[in-house]
Length: 279
Image 1 (cartoon, rainbow, N blue to C red):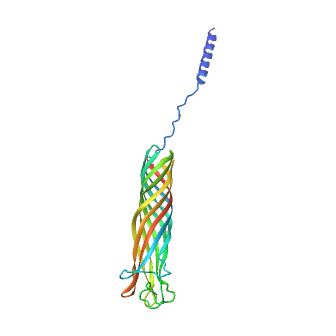
Image 2: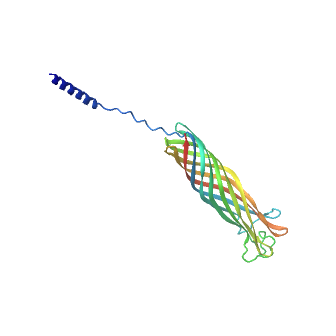
C-alpha cells in the first residue's frame, strides 16, 4: 500500500512539472528605436563642381589723362566666359526642430579650382592706327590694335546662410537656404600695343579683390545612421562686380593707352556633403 502511494505522488509531481513547463513564456516587448532629431550642432565636409561665369566689359582711355577712347569697328569690348572648376571645403551649423519643421544656420568655407580667360581688342583704324594705337604714324603689318588678354579665377569663397527645412520623413530633410556670400577674385593678364616705331610692347598686371554678395539654394539631407547625415545641395552665388585699371602703355612721352575692366561674377554650385551631429 505504501508503495502505491509513493508511485501516485511521483506521478502527480511529474504531471505538475510538465504542466509548468508548458506554460507560455512572456518576453518583454522590444523598445522601438529612438526617433531621429535634427536639433543640435554639427560639423562636416563637402565636395563638388561649380559652373561660374564672368560677364566682363573693357574700356580704353588715354594715359595719362583718362580720356575715353571710342573703339572703332572691329573692336571687342565685352565677353562672357566660364569660370568652371572643382570646389571643396567644410561647414558647421546648428539646427532647431519643432514638429516637422527645422530651422538652422550654417557657415562654410570653400577652396576652388575655378578659372577662365578672354581676349579684348581696341582695333586699329586707318593707315596710322587711329586712337587705339596712339603715337603711330603708320600701321605695321600684323598689328590689329591694342589687345587685352584677361584671366580670372575664383580663389576661394564662403557663405553664411539661414536654412528652413521640412521633414518628408523623420530621417529625410528637404530645405531651402540663403544669405551672405563672399570670395576672392583674382584678375591678371597682359595689355599689348605698339610703339611709335611699330614695335610690339606689353605690360602685365595682376589684381586681387575680396567681394561680398549673396546666395540662395536648396538641398536634401538624410540620416545615415548613428550621428551621421549626408546631403546634396545646389547654391547660386552672386559676388557682384570687380573692376580695375591696367597700367598704360606709353607710346610717346605725352600720349599712351590704358584699359579699364569691370566683371560681374556669378556661380552655380552642386556639391555633396557629410555631417556629424553632436547630441
